[in-house]
Image (cartoon, rainbow, N blue to C red; front, top):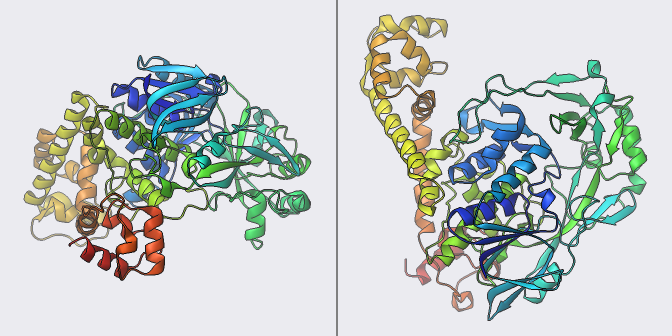
Length: 621
């Protein structure tokens, strides 16, 4: 008898097992292939727009993904540096093999995790409570709770042209049969989604004189808050090329044998990561599309062709690749393909990621209709935390939309219609100015500490950092700098000279004026600030807080209004049929989603403001 059984050892399964085990739960991690733990089946990269923020939030909560990419990254970049801090997003290419080995080593070093190489085919429950997992070997493993992190394995089907093959994640990995049918018998509703991957090529066959080199940042910020902020490691360059009119004509030759266009693929694909053939159809006026050539590791010549995801016939893929600048003699190691798989509509889970139909059964990752390693890892982490808290008799952790991108992710899953693979964007977060990558530790470390995933030293260091930020912020408001100290700076930025002293806060609100400039200009100001802290990460937070003070205050007020609605609980098994005045659509959606709070109900598509007013009156506002 284990505390928690984790089905699947992808990014969701790894975080689920590690978080639960570190909180004291005995865990069994079940995978059909233990050599594929945390395998990067698609792009070997972590982070990016919104995804980088999620990765740092995972670290702040006590997860492992950020440490893994810091240890195995081969190129690091900060995206959107030319934009405001809310848009800055860390991204790193990973050594695919080393990343998987790192996660396996971490898992094997955790004494509370046992590993089992077998395939789960279903769950057992009694009176609506989970009791065990059935295996291909014929036996049943018992546990107090289970987390299903099945990825794309459920009835997986791979398409290359008009050929299709059974596959769970790659052609070499078998799918899982029977699990979907088992859950459907229990009352769950499933759907079908599609994702894809591009061809892989031999890096030695590229003409590098014809492609643009894309280097990593010379000085880069680590993903983990508990490591050194700068990582000194040899980086590998990526390269950029683009499709041409010839490429598009070659690809069009295969449209009559495309599984997407002939109706062979029934699952809905990701809108924001379309295949190259889909791009050509959707944007016929666009003459070219950027293609990124990304290395897969230090000890391999295999290269990922980012932006060229396709399921066209293999010979069409090869011919089209050779039409790209720099790839006229390219060697294709393996073709791109599309994969269809089963998922379960996420309105069937609670905010804790526990299913509504079966107690102590949790869903995490692509089984909930999401895409992306980061989204999966975040769900796995929360599922592991909440399953363990449940066993320990403690309340679950619920992250609000104003707490984290992870809170936005989970709220979107349980309130919105997920009919296509869900991907996180900064535009999905209405509080994105507060949810920056640089302050994830300040926002979330207390959650990880409360759960038991972070030690006292780490939490105390964050508390000291917050105290220093507040103290320097106050100093900037009170201390005035003399005109003679700052007029030179202002002149270089075309500002008029000062005649009277100005506070550091007022000066920092001017575009182009930065804290390090003021520190260099005024010895007294510098000594006062250094007496509090000399940490550049503290200075970064102070500058952002002061420059965006008005916007942050407005954002905080809006978040507090939304939070008030989220504090209004809706009783379990509340009967919406007995509430007169609800619209028919609103009643139908409320019955379907069974929201936990008024705030959650207000975000369900089809539930109108008047429905919310009626509901609040009925619940005794």
